[in-house]
Image (tube, rainbow, N blue to C red; front, top):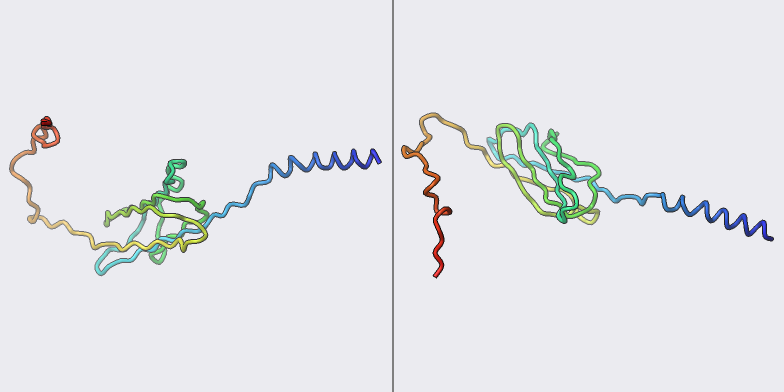
Length: 147
């Protein structure tokens, strides 16, 4: 009887470290970013995507340049949390979007951004001021008088 009890206690002690070392499955989700182009907008070649956690526990969880396929970017295995999402377009179109949102299993996790038509540079239509800018005369540098 004592041998069986000793065997039972030994098997329980061996099982405890194995249980504590087991990792819980993460509920990571895939995030899809869709880009909607308006007429005359050049095709987006590359996009910088940055995910920052809202509670400041992880800055730049995802910080990578993606190349859209069929105007979509799929970011796999994003941990569920509340994020500041920044999407910056690289190349001809210098548009950027910021958003504060949740990423989890209960939401669709599909974000759509409408890209505006970029302006073009035409020589001769740019107006350059004749007076040089004097940074010493800025309104923010004037002393404030409180009554």
